[in-house]
Image (cartoon, rainbow, N blue to C red; front, side, top):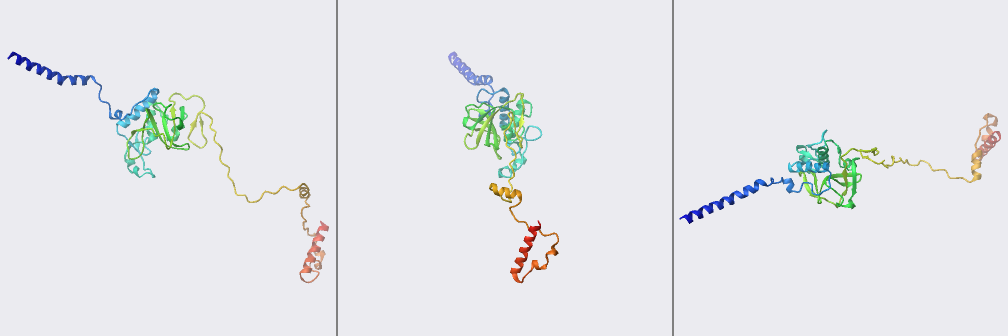
Length: 298
């Protein structure tokens, strides 16, 4: 009887340990990470500045909150989500005016404003890529090797950058991609329209800053932009040909043509000089006399 009682007590003790031990271990473990972290939205590589890491964290918090892409969102008077507008070229944007969120550059603006405490990247994708707050630039040909978390990835042509995103590291980026979707983590798209990357200088800007002619682009170096193109009007006359020396001298002296000079008192010539005979021959003779008389009086 004692053996049976002892076996039952041992079994109860074993069951108690089995049920209580996982709870004890769980209490010591950190809480389960948010879904955004499961999606990889966090700093995924070393080397970023503290401000760049804060910018990444800010963008990832918006991903975790399920914020929508909305065309024109994030470009209010202050950084932050705003209601968007309908993009005439994108039928999927019909609900953007009803959604509070960001477009690509609005998200970048908000992320770095929260990271630095100042609105340092106000503007569209082109203005952000060509910012005078540039620590380094990287071409598309350089790939991902030199990039660090927080760098800005730009897409489009040099004169028309249409998309921008935040690099996370490990070939990932966080972006506000297009209407009808929420903010997301994506693989970096290196092909197609990828233009290059820029590293943001979040510190004080030293030295001169120049504004490129006719744009909102600011640079640290004096821009080399040609002036306005000359307006070419259609030619209304031909350029005179260069004449030989002898003919130029005749032009200078006014002898290149015979000028008809009328006499001061035409009636003295008489009517017969104009029409000495009948018919066309007479008229020609009269004009010939008049011409000669005029030359003699000249």
